[in-house]
Length: 365
Image (cartoon, rainbow, N blue to C red; front, side, top):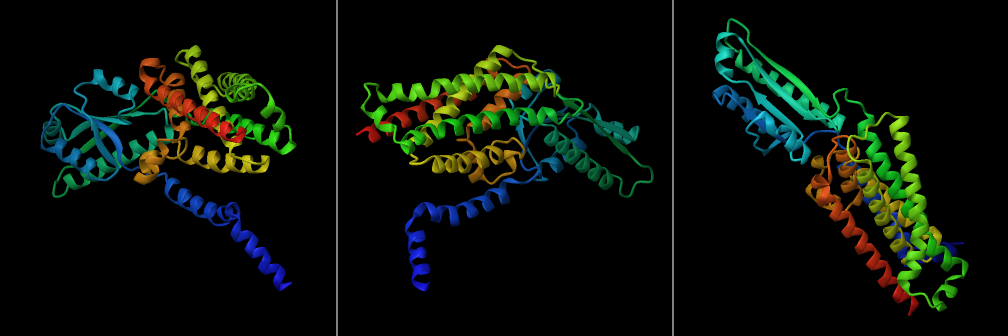
């Protein structure tokens, strides 16, 4: 029995895949969950419009920016440019001080601040407004020390794109992305692996078809099925969940088709490096599910994460597709605002297709 146990240890230690599952996955999951699962706000980009520019407004601005929750990301010189910076995603909140702020605070004992937040992500916008209001209230308490009469700094909040703060505006784009990414990639990840496992790969290897033709033949049926799935998801989101489509429906469908092709090409690449369906499914779940949920900005703000995870999120396709879906469905934006994200996803699709073809050629040899 002792010899058998020792032999089993040798088998485990020699199999690097088992070692990765035993020790690599727990370590990576703990680090991801520990650093990514944070609902706190850090370094949120804001813009400030100061019509007064006096010592009080400058003091409040300094207190807001020195809190560690906000960074000054863009300068907006008037209310007419607010929607433009929100469209480009440069800021998540705009703080507006009324004119003659210090004078009104001294004479009328009251002055107002308007806070406008991008509520396409309702949880984040609600936290931003709450943090800003708390900092302003804290300054008000400090300002009133030693005064006989109280002063009031009123904070008026406005939520752009989602005034009712409906959670469906946050979850639907993320759910669409996760379903298309996981289902389509997982379907194709086991396709070539299944051919190897069932012994039918030899038929494909001796056929006159080139590697790109075999891969295209594998992908195209799944493209059509996944696109039908995307249409069903969008119909349910619109008619059942009440998710609006303020932008072009054709543009949304075209972007969804591009994302499906990218996800399928990633699934094909996983299948070309897997020797069995079980391994292909494990790679799909481990390499796609956790990063898609944690590092895409779907639930947890990317700004809250360490720099290393922020850089890692740049290579996560769901991050860019969520931006595209929110921009079209919630903000009603056109292609001129999402062309960068579109090019990134298209580049990723070409990259994974090229890797799949190259790896498949090696297998053929």
